[in-house]
Image 1 (cartoon, rainbow, N blue to C red):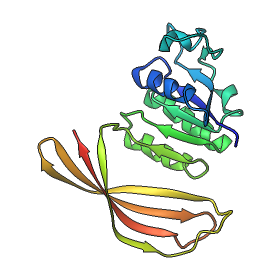
Image 2 (image 1 turned 60 degrees about the vertical axis):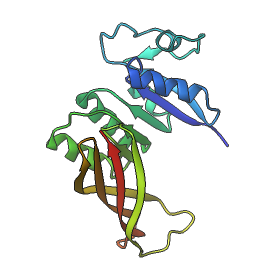
Image 3 (image 1 turned 180 degrees about the vertical axis):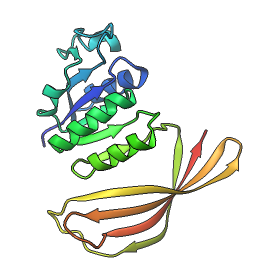
Length: 195
């Protein structure tokens, strides 16, 4: 099986550095690009400079467009403006876009939802520790065939404070099958987040 080819956007940040280290230490993944915004002091540097390791041969660039044609996924911890551009490119190239960026306006959120019509977008602006409690009201409505394309849609439906440092989140969850009006699955997904 070929490794998943990944771009890390926001490579010199704390999360970018951590993700790069994980990618290069796992044979299931291949780092094919690392990016930063214009003017970043690490532009042109080998990724090894930000993660303090031996040379890797991947140089940090601000020219992300050329990387998308070669990638299977982008992991993005940048700024909203950059993330919106990345979502547009992920949609155009039909690749996975993992978003850890925060600070989006409602208008920005709508643009991300629009991009998710053609790309798999996984968005989590909060990377705090949590526990998956499980599913409630789980309903399987349609079978998923081997070659079907599916996507998960998660809408936050409830937040309940358990104590001052813990909340319970309930997500209205739907798994859609491309080309089928009936979803494969509907459920309430319950998780506990530590603040």
